Amino acid sequence: MRLRCLLVTLIGTLSLATGAVHAQSAGGGGALAPRAPGAGASPALDTEAPRANDALALAIYRELVEINTITATGDTAQAAEAMARRLRDAGFAASDVQVFKPAPRKGNLVARLRGSGARRPLLLLAHIDVVEARGEQWQTDPFRLTEKDGYFHGRGTSDDKFMAAAFVANLIRYRQEGYQPQRDIVLVLETDEEILDADAMGIQWLIAHQRDLIDAEFALNEGGSVVLKDGRPRWNTLQTSEKVSVFFKLEVHDAGGHSAVPTRSNAIYRLAAGLERLATFEFPLQLTDTTRAWLDQMARIETEPTRSDMRAVLQPSPDAQALRRLSASPSLNAQLRTTCVATLIEGGQATNALPQRAAATVNCRLMPGTTVESVRETLAVVLAEPAIVISPIGVSTVSDPSPLRADLMAAIESVSAEFWPGAPILPTMSAGATDGTFLRNAGIPTYGHSGMAMEQGESRAHGLDERVPVGSFYKGVEYLYRLVRRLAGPT
Ligand SMILES: [Zn+2]
View 1 (tube, rainbow, N blue to C red):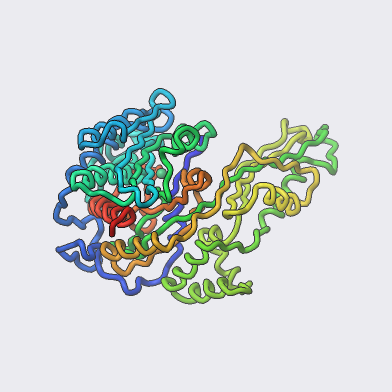
View 2 (view 1 turned 135 degrees about the vertical axis):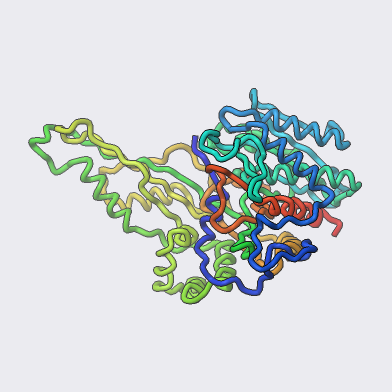
């Protein structure tokens, strides 16, 4: 099982920015905060007056966190059923609230708030499975939602039960308010996001078995966040694309023999020599619409000399020196090109024998639009050792970026300004993966955007003591309420 964590990747990716905050308001409040927090106020202390929906949102959040939904051992069917019950109790027709259970303890919820049909549906996707959490290592019980030091603690509080709870609470609120959107709002709470197995039974299963039910013009998913620095908003991210993770096995075989009589065809040496060439190799600069827009925005935020270097790399003939300087930052380098790195090595069979086999695993992260075969061919040239056999491990899903929709950008810019004034909207490509890849490949453009505000580098998704600032939870729920309403119209 390979674990994934988009949030860590994303926030990590963005932590390279070092420039000062420009033209941004103090505090995390903005138009929604009647009590203006003081300069430098921590988001953890941002306790605004409760809004109408807060109690419901918190109850749902608590219920989700307190159902153990660890992908391999927990019960997502129970969580899906619990959310279905809440929606039906709020007046949703049973036919508009369906739970699919492809296997015992595996559940997917598909719910629909019906619109006028003037426009194609909007899909809201969140996953309800979580990664392992060993309680004895935590400060609090990971499966009890605990408010402590201004944070909500618990496994899944950020990844991804924040969005799941917000979507369910907001759908109930729309219904209570009698809101009729111009398009159906389709909510999918899926299982099995945290595994990459081909037989995962979440969105892949729904695409295979219920494609029409989840059809939408576009989708919102995890993968974006509002990044704070000392409580002040720096930017709000919109993830449109993901790098694709591909693993290659590199193998050299040899006849072997007695180590008292070394030969020139030593498998370990031939593999090592190839890996050394790979260590100094860089794939060429490759930009997409998203990473261009990202660099352009970052150049406004960054200080010199990074700012000038970013602009120089955006030129039709990118400046080689500027590119070299930017590439020295590992997180920025990952945004500029495909990367391949050795992650595992093995070889030999006895301390006194010539190795009959040496092998390495190389993990490549492909820029959108890059094929697995083209990377394999590049590796063959770089390794420059015909004895190294290169083969991809498993099947990788590549996907193209979702287009930067003008209507979506306009809606996000407008609503985000009410909550985090001055924070630019930053289109991003994440170096990790979410299930957005599968939706994109199924013809549904997908955008990672959550309204969850976290301190830069703070994400503990998949880690110990996962938590979300209390103020960020309530504000994020309200943000998604307004944004989805704006996207679903009428505005
Ligand atoms: Zn997640």
